[in-house]
Image 1 (cartoon, rainbow, N blue to C red):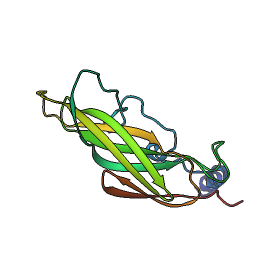
Image 2 (image 1 turned 180 degrees about the vertical axis):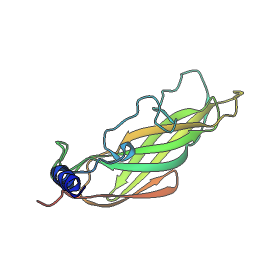
Image 3 (image 1 turned 45 degrees about the horizontal axis):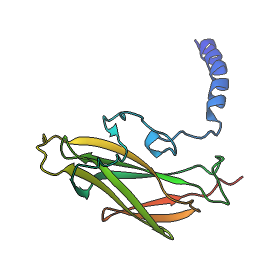
Length: 170
C-alpha cells in the first residue's frame, strides 16, 4: 500500500508542476474586448444594432432601458495599442418593452475621462404592440483610445465607471 502511494505521488508531481505555472486566466466573454455573441448570448439576450428609420414612418423615441454596462478595454498585449492607449468598447444589456420597439440611436461625447452617452429606442406612432419584454445586448466601440486610468460613462443619466489598466510589468 505504501509503495502504491509513493508511485502515485511520483506520477502526480509532474502534472501538478505543469499546472502550477503562471498563465493568464481567461476572462468571461462579456468582459473580453471584441467578443461578440452574434445572435443570442447564453442568457437569451438577442444581439441588436441600431436600425435605420423608414422614411415614411413616424416614431416616438425614448431612452433605452439599460440593465448593465460592461466596459471592455483591449489588452495592452494586443496589436491595438497606440501610443500607450487602447480602444474600449462597451456591452450594454437592456430590454425593449414591447414587440414594436427597436434601438434607434447611440450618441457619445467625450470630455477627458468622462463619456456622455445616450442610447435611444423608438416605437412607431399609433402602433398597437404586444407588451413583451425583449432583453437585448448592444455592442458599441467608444470613440478614440484610452490611456490607463479611471473613466466615467454617463448613459441615459445613469453613471457607470471603468478602469483601463496599464501593461503588466515585465
